[in-house]
Length: 552
Image 1 (cartoon, one colour):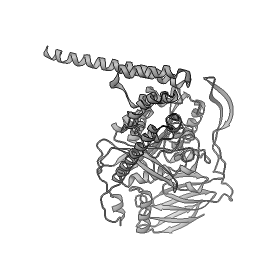
Image 2: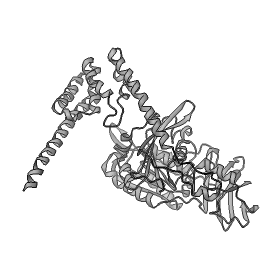
Image 3: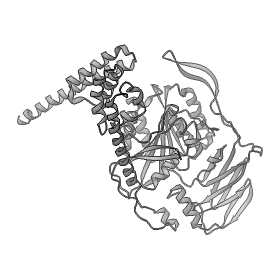
Image 4: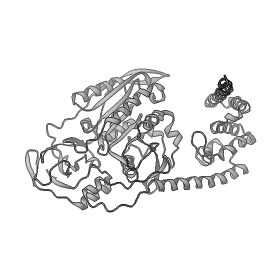
């Protein structure tokens, strides 16, 4: 009975807290809805809803609502009221979404949202303080980044075994890091690393890189917001990544520098992985890429063009196509792809997904498509998408990269993407005629979904699934018992990387190219080559001790 009297006031308090929060949210959401109509004649009505919420529920006021109230009053030229809300917002270390207060003064959007405040002395005062705050903010990020990359001193990596067991890793002070990435001398971006809760530097961890969509409308970010990356549409990556001790990585791309429409930024993901491996104990055989929309197309593009670092690829609402060159789908045989598609997707139609799925099945490629009916392109927004993430992480848990596959099939049309696992530096010779076995694989899409006056309709089209703008070369390679058999088409030269995990270095190696013996002999350890290769790739498993150079 005593317990009952204690718990009842608590339940009463919680009930009223929840009710108050719901009422506050209802008022502010209504205000935001009116604001988004962009009808200036209704701005006063929208503001009154915010004011009512602030007055009735002062303990519920958050940065987002202060922002909306400030821009409403700024647009209505209620200067005093605008500063009443903007001043406390600008002084926040960060709002509930993780954005620092100074960004509401210094970021580019502020120039338009607060144009009526900018001529005032009060704005100039806020600007001075915001600049001081931003300097401190970036100094803190720099300090954390330096700590992130700090490692223990280690002896020189002079032997194969020392590379395989290399572990200079330290405990980390933080769980979330915003890390800068230089693109060129004048351009940089950033990425976010989210570590497992109990990260242990003696243990190897899987990594999942997430690529965002909308690259044509995105811009590079010089800092990352933890709350933004881990919440919203990414909430299930966070939930199941945390549950399975997966390191999550979020990257910012732009129209020019991305993973889909331009090769200018394609280097970013491999560079980020190599960089992370210098300071975090990554399982080299469990590095994965996922993404949504343009990000999913990016994931597919790494499968097609540069898969060696990765174990597998995932995509939500993917358009499975390379936009910067040919799409050679037989390259998918070297890894795996899991696609999560919907039947109401304007980005890529369900019938095309079905055609590709059938084609991959015929080629015996490790490709799966999970269809979710009744959902549009923005499937990750819905709670019903959670089972897809469960599938993704179950696949991730059991999947490992085969670093030394006995069979490789690789086709490419750009020398930048001329390496795959133990075949490297392949040189195109497109003046040669194609061999009969080098065939173009494609199919025709005859229906495409699009929105017309808010309704999704199917339009008749006659569209090839893939483009082939350049001549390509292809190589098929196998090895067993120290013997390599290589077939080439439109290839002039290539190299075979050698690992003692693949062959017996005490015995002769034979290499047959297009049926003719091109090499026979022993291959020795080359320490300089081995260490140089490790410094380049940061891979402790796929360690090459030497290579054989061959001309066709």
